Length: 380
Image (cartoon, rainbow, N blue to C red; front, side, top):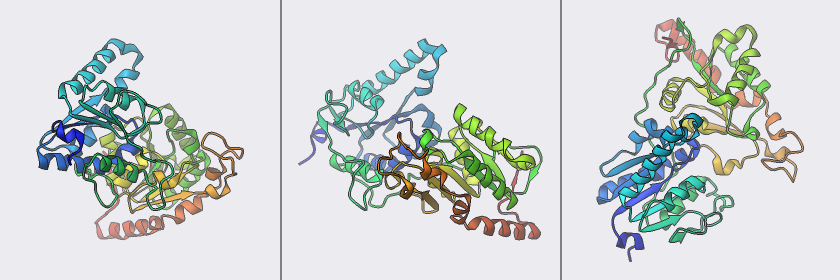
């Protein structure tokens, strides 16, 4: 027997304006699978995404019968453009309602997704969580996210369960979405010629309990510069900018082989930089997931966050976590050891996790002699 929503029509709306890049990447394969299914079956699909992800993800999710509406999050945060923001929000809601979905569903637990689903005017509305939103939906899915069975702890499996419970097809093997529109391109760094491979460092994160000590990032940067790399610092916002300034200040004369690109790259430009780089080391964050999705080798440093749930999916990504030093009452927001799970991670351990660092430099040196530099880049 067909599910209720299939009996009522063939127009689906996925309300997913998450602000977290990592979440969108971890659910992206399921979204691409849904896109393909709807295109094959002649089903109209509406994807509601955060406006900041448009340039990178619209090409990845584009197909016949797919429509996009973008939630204007950045505009809503601009205090001096309240009237413009209100109009943009109303336009977003009206576009969702105009689609006249037979099914509207959420896959995240955030309030924005659920508020838009409430306002969608869909005939059948499904929430992926009952814990916080107990009205306005025709069905609530009981999907465990934090305490899943061994072997299925990744949040990828929770997303898969949501789609499966809606009788939608799901992929068998977990992976990131295919981002085929990304090509390697290096932005302006410093004038002249850079013959060094690029080593990306992301010292920031969305939460303080995810950040490896800045002194450790300084030591890491110094050591990879000694090995022949040009370090590129990335990030966005005041917090990341302050961390990057601290890293640069700690490099001494080596600062010439380090460039700070904080707040200078949009998401697509960041992806293009990753496609041109050699390695990355960063905290548990969206950029680390993007690098992993693009196959950039590197290391992701985890603090008290549950690694099994949020671990990057890419095979070239290593994860380091020291949860074994935590006390029994340690949580993300409460630690009597000043987050020793982060401070006890040594630079040696990080470098040992990417033994290709030395091999890559040696390879680049050989290629340089032959006139074919595989890792060096020309800086505009």
